[in-house]
Image (cartoon, rainbow, N blue to C red; front, top):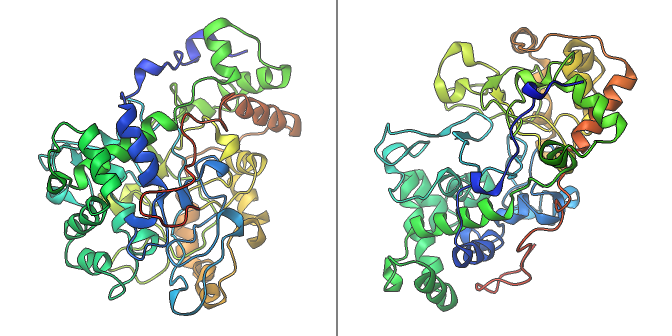
Length: 423
């Protein structure tokens, strides 16, 4: 049985950044409005959809140029087809509005910092504008400028072209698009005290509206585990045994700690490698070096941010590249990484067909030296667990699912002010 001093304090609403309802309503519309994308063909909600627990159900996402939603999304056709898979699994948005969050993204490349005088250390460095309310508002701006996520390819649209000049050159173009729509202009003027004229609307207010929506929409602290923490309501017997393992023999809580079940640090799990990788400019191979890509520190190679676990049962597949389709397979990897890698098969990765990308999807696995480097970087120690233990751990993880997990305050909107189709 887990000891009381091992367990986190209860998670409560007052631990989250506050969100003005009017701003959150604007954010909901923007979240599903493709007007924010370069080619007006993808929204934030395409890859973080309400029907899919705030994710897309894919191992590696299909960004701009793709067609459809979730596991049924295709890679597109003709000139508009995708040129590259999204290098990493779409992270869930649950509870990123918690005040304890210090960094975001699988490699932590956005973090709270005074380094550049705008409150954040980010890929935009000193060009990230001042005035963003919190880290959620800041993170909302970066998919808009990512070529294969929402911006599009050079020469296709103004936004994509501007990004290639400098990242902050794209944001005024996006803001101009939004304020040119009368409904948005009126809503922003009513909700934001610093907007008296449509020309006052900038990417800062857009980020803050998106942040207000994400922070309020994706809160979750009404799971059976929360009831256990607050009122000692017993968990189902299997989940109770799983909790004892989680905080005991299985040692899961050494990384998945605190009320959000993350230490917000970076660890190497030795996942099977595939996909285009989040390569650096000088990197000649389709690999993902994880945190080292941000820090340039060799000791950070192949390490990724510990993901939070609340509502984890709603957000398959798992791992920074979505290598494992089920909680059971992800647990199996944690207890025996070498065995897991040896038994992993390519069909476990949910990658929508894109024949023109097949040559690169798994090519990194043929680089024996790179695979040896990745396999040596391992921060988890194999342990012996029985099949029953694994089933109990899985039951405990299911106890982290909020009772309102699929019933959100605002949900998906049916229409947006731009008039574009909503996914």
